[in-house]
Structure formats: C-alpha cells, structure tokens
Length: 252
Image 1 (tube, rainbow, N blue to C red):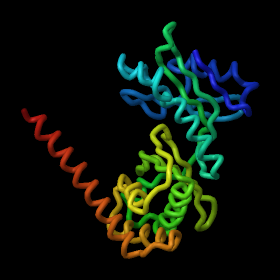
Image 2 (cartoon, rainbow, N blue to C red):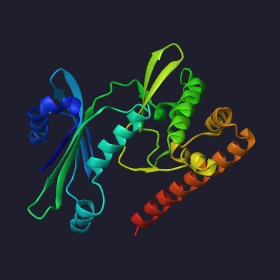
Image 3 (spheres, rainbow, N blue to C red):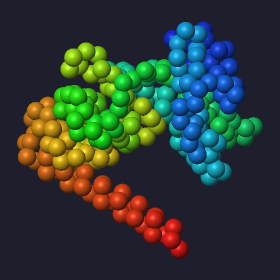
Image 4 (spheres, helix red, strand yellow):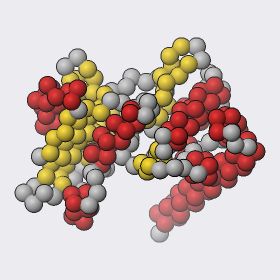
C-alpha cells in the first residue's frame, strides 16, 4: 500500500487510514458510480470527502502501475498545483494506493476537504432567471481565465465540476472538483474557448462569457463570441447525435 499524506495532516495518518479501511461500511454516500464512489465522513472536527477509484482492468492496471500516474495521485497533485496558483479547490489531504506483490495497482482513494457549497453552474443553465445569473457568469469567466493564465486546461470543465459559494451580495467563490483529467501548457485563444464547450451554454450565456473574456484577455469580443458559439454548437450536436444513435441501437 502506498500512502501519501499532506504534511499539514501528517499527525492524523492513523485516522485517515481508518477512513479508507472502513470506506464501504461507514460515511455518507454522495455519489455512487460504476467506477468511482464518493463518501463524506469526519476527520477529527473536519468534514472530508473520500473518493474511491475501483481497481482497473488488467491492461490499465499495468499502465497506471508503471507508465502513468493513478487517478488518485493526479487528483492530489493537481489540487496542490491549483492551490499554489491561487485557484480554489478542496484541500488535498491524502491519497492511498493498494498494490499487490508485483506492484500492480488495485483500489485507490483520494481524501480531500469537503466544501459546503450553495450551487453549481448547472443550476444557471437550467434556470435563465437564476438570481444574479449574469454576474455569476462574469465571475466564473474570471475564474476560468485565471486558470488558463496558470496554464491549466481542465478537461472536465463541465456544469457539475465547479462548486459555487455565495459570499455576499454579488460576490461568489468557485472551487474546481473532479480533477484527475488536466493538461498543462500555454493555451491558444482557440483552446481557451474550447475549454468552455462542455458547459452546455445557451446563446445568452455565450454572449456574457465572450464579452467578459474579451475584457480580460484584450481579444476581440466578436472573435471570441464566434469561436465560443461554434465550439458550443459543435459539442451539442456531437452529444445529441451520440444519444440519438444510442437510442436507435437499443431498438435492435
């Protein structure tokens, strides 16, 4: 077993391991998926989340064991990178990897701070009359711009992966979650607009984001609007077609 614990939590190693060993018997279920499960639990006086990554298949086990970082390790490392660049994310506490005698990866876990949030971007998409909707979108655009300036391309930048906390009248905080898929490097303006496509934006939302991003980047608003609108439309068409084909195949 490989155990990496943030220095801030080194004294709580025993309690952290207890959370992992009792994962299936204790805690409150947040998400139950086919590959990953997330639970909340208490670590001393703190609320934490434990994300369980199911043992990969034989081929992927070899890849993750010897050639590529595991999802748990990437989640931990990327969270530290974000915080070093002042991009909020739940604090990374630890990651644990179970391995057999040959060093092959089994189950793994990522432990992080739990954020008690108010809503996500998803609520803004489904409710055009959401209070201060445009203001939130503008601040979300600033948050994303800051991420891009830190050379972060968050590949799962989708409606449910940004938690939002209302701090006061007109002020909001944003936290990235589900971090294990990121790329790092200088992003072209095309790549930056492409990074918004999974947000499933309406035409109005595209307009708000393009205008704010233009102010921040010094780029032409018209240019950004055209790129973002095209990226958004292409993504929606792709997903809609995929769903249509899936329904079609189910009939046979």
